[in-house]
Length: 87
Ligand SMILES: [Zn+2]
Image 1 (cartoon, rainbow, N blue to C red):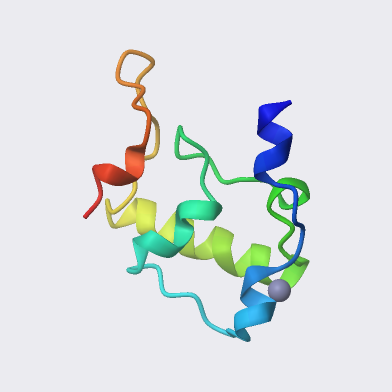
Image 2 (cartoon, protein in one colour):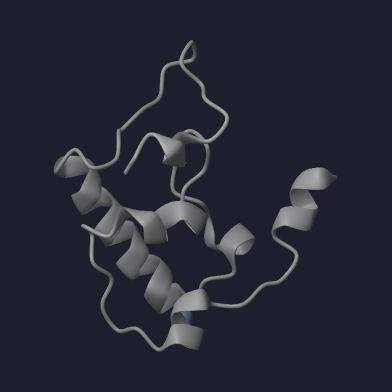
């Protein structure tokens, strides 16, 4: 149950920061909203509110289209921390 510990605190990070707009170019902020295979994390794990989850989803999909984030990760190329690759 190590994974459960990771998402112990459930609150909307974006509500706390009072952001109304999420920039798709700012890839580093998606760190908590993407899984290790660059999938969008569900709301039940991240604790985002519905409004912000929708904004995050749109931003991530835009970032994918602009090739900032890969769509899929190969099974062979699974890395421990994919965010080291993005800089
Ligand atoms: Zn929120």
